[in-house]
Length: 261
Image 1 (cartoon, rainbow, N blue to C red):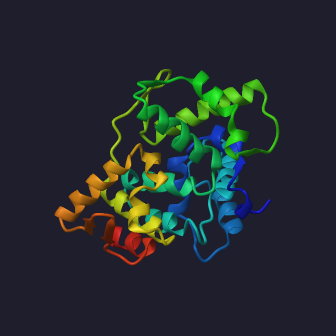
Image 2 (image 1 turned 120 degrees about the vertical axis):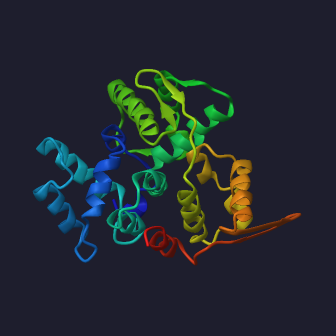
């Protein structure tokens, strides 16, 4: 199955293996953009510059990187930022956005389960509730590669909650509660550029469901845009139904380069 056709595929493997934030950052910091993906992954396995504690974990990291990312094109900015020493705090939310471009289950869970629970004022998120959500995936357009056992379903539910903790959306080890999450300013501006790369209009951009990945409502997005406009970091004008937005750079790659200049 090609990577282009995987956007609706529900993979238990990548979710159970986790976010791999530090491992991905280390791999991309050492990534050779002149070499092929296969050559880079071979080097991850042979040189272990990510500091894996076992050969099996090293193989798992390479497998997840191979399935999750396209460093030569769609995810090249992640590599550029890691190679240039972008702070992990700013890089993590950018990583999450890129991960969810081609990982149906993580995107759907964050947008359609976790954000809904947040909107409804939930304080805690329970694994059994996530398991019920997982039982309805086929109704949401997700395609599982094979039927899951009860144990796999439990592990996937735990994996989704752990990833949300790793990205700072939830907190806690046994009991998961919503954290007070704030998207870093430059990460927010990067995401504005990344969404605009797809010819999204300013009004559509403010209302994009992608902001719910970071527990942000359209009103939160507009508040941040107005704040950044006040400090002259972008230009945001609203007059009735007319919305105008001018960003610092022409595209997300140019802004990524500016972030680490």
